[in-house]
Image 1 (cartoon, one colour):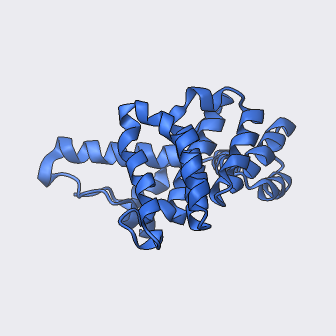
Image 2 (cartoon, rainbow, N blue to C red):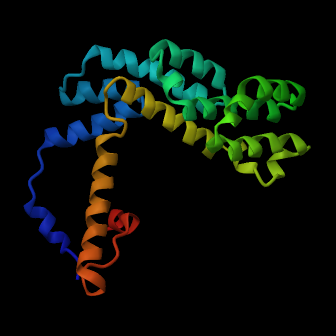
Length: 215
């Protein structure tokens, strides 16, 4: 048994709620120009300080995504001075991005020196040891992109770190670290999974977000 999609039609949704959800996503992901156009088209009001901070977050996000981690760290320390001191895991990930860029640029001696001064101190904490070993192992390969740790050089890894940094900066400013649409999807998925568990195998079919979006 599954929910009849026709029942959705009985749920009234206000345009303003939809606008707020869309705006939340755009602000969260630093789409500044799109936010300005969307606000102008819908007549919504958006505080100017949000736009200013969004531009700063956008620069930080793109520097991290491009692998320019030192610049991302510099700008983060300006926008959120104590963030990286408190979030050591994020700081490690950002430093590791710079290490990877040095490796990719074939600057192995510089990469080793950087690792010894900036990354090795993290090895005193057990949870960083395995990741540190993986990064250091890249030095042993002439073609690190073909090593077992190739994923550390990928765009997906940089995207993961950039997303984590963006969420951390938002949380530091006492703003939601996830956009409204992400939280709605998380909540919907969790509720459907709980219903599956409570109703058992004869209850609701296994919820698939991918299938739901196609319906």
